[in-house]
Image (cartoon, rainbow, N blue to C red; front, side):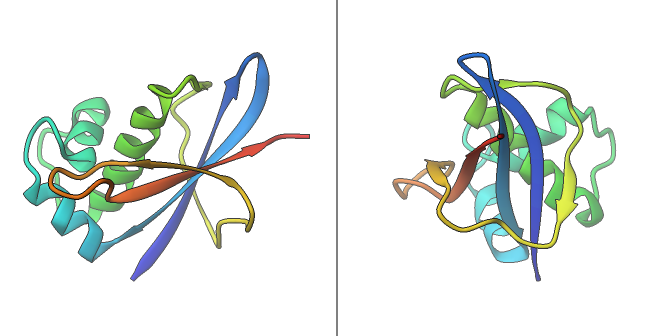
Length: 113
């Protein structure tokens, strides 16, 4: 099952929305990358999950992906991450994650108008 997530931030003082898709397959591959590479594990640290479960994997992966996007000049506004129906088309991509591949997922950036 694929889920879509959204959070907000800013780039150069202008508001942006960030989106990422998650799936059980991508999360399993991500966790297999291990500490230091896994977006899911990074998200769990940020969410301070003492007893993570499969139920938290999707939001943990999304959190880690958004934190990784923040390394690309995006300042996250707050820690609110919401599930959305879909990711809009035509947005700027930021590829990230993974260990052996060039990237595992894409965070999409949309300037807010």
